Image (cartoon, rainbow, N blue to C red; front, side, top):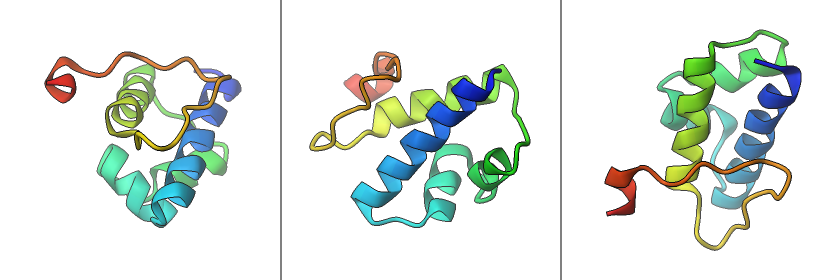
Length: 84
């Protein structure tokens, strides 16, 4: 994973937290099941490609309809189970 990819996840978490009025810990817990995930990314620690892909997919599946997805971040299609 690249620093830019991690930054995309952090940007998504910031936008999501602000829009939903959730704490960063809560967004991290919902997205990853780990309240410290985004904190560790901010500290310069990484994650696997599999984890980053799963978190990106979580954001795509759970993104608020009244919040525009950031144009500089490629958005994966919603999961079939979420799209149903």
